[in-house]
Amino acid sequence: MEAFSVRSFGRLFDKYITPRNIRWIEVCIIRLAIAFFLAHLAILFLFNHVPALYRGHSFNYLKAVYTPFSFILVYEVLLLVVILPESMTQFIGKQFEIIALITLRSFFHDMSGINMQGTIHLGDPELFSLGYDLVASVVMLALTIVFHRLHSRHRDPEDPEALHRFINLKKAISVALIVVLFFTCIYNLSLWTFNASQSILNNSEFPDPNAFFYHDFFNTMVYADVLLLIVSFLFDSSFYSVFRNASFIISTILLRLSLNMERPANHLVAISAFSFSVAVMLILQIQSKDWVRDAKA
Image (cartoon, rainbow, N blue to C red):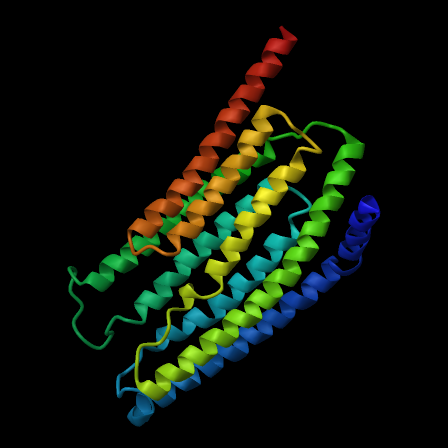
C-alpha cells in the first residue's frame, strides 16, 4: 500500500510537472512581474504627487525594481521544489541561489532609501548597506558556482532499483511541498497586504517584505531536508552520504537564521552556510578520489 502511494505521487508529479507546464507558469510570472512593476511605479507616482495619501514623503522610483525581482524569486522557489527529484545536492544549490538573489534584491530596496536629489556622502550609512549587499552577493555567487562544480563531479552509487524508489519518494515529497508552499504563499501575501494597508491608514512604516514568506519557506525547507536525510537511508546509508546530507540540513538552518539578523551579521551567517557545504563537498570529493586511487593500487 505504501509503495503504491509513493508510485501514485510519482505519476502525479510526472503528469503535471512537465516542461510545458513549467514554461506556462514562467510566462505567467513574467506577465505578473511586468504588471506589478508598472502598478508599483503608478503607486509611487501617486504618493509623490498626492502627499496626503501617505505621510507626505517623497519616494525613490527605484523602489519599484524590488517588485519584479520578487516575482523572479517566486519562480526560483518553484524551480527549487521541481528539481528535488533530480538531486538533493541540486536542491541545496538552488537554496543558495535563492539566498544570493534575496541579497541582491536587498540592494534595490536599500537604493530606494537614498536621496538621489541631494548630496550623497561617502560616509552615509545607506552606502555601507549597499556595499554589504553587493560584496555579499558576489561572494555567494562565487560559492554557489563552486558548489555546483563540485556537484557535477560527484557520482552516486549505481543501484537502479534503489535509485528509482528513492526518486519516487522525492517526487512524493516534491508534490507535498508544492501544496504547502502554495498555501504558505497565499497566507503570507494576504498578511503582507493587510499590514501594508494598515501602514497607509496609520501613516506608519511599511512592513519589511523580507520578513514575509521566506521565513516560513526556509522553515519548511529544514523539515524537508530532515525528511530527505531519513529517506536517503533507503538509497545510501554510508557514513559519507549521511554526513553530506546532514551538512545540508545545517546549511539550511544557518540560512534560515540569517533571515532574522541585521547587516552585516546576516550576510556573514549566510556565507558561512555556503562555505560549510562547499567545504564538506570538497573534502568528500578528495576522499572519494583517494579511495579510487587506493582501490586501483
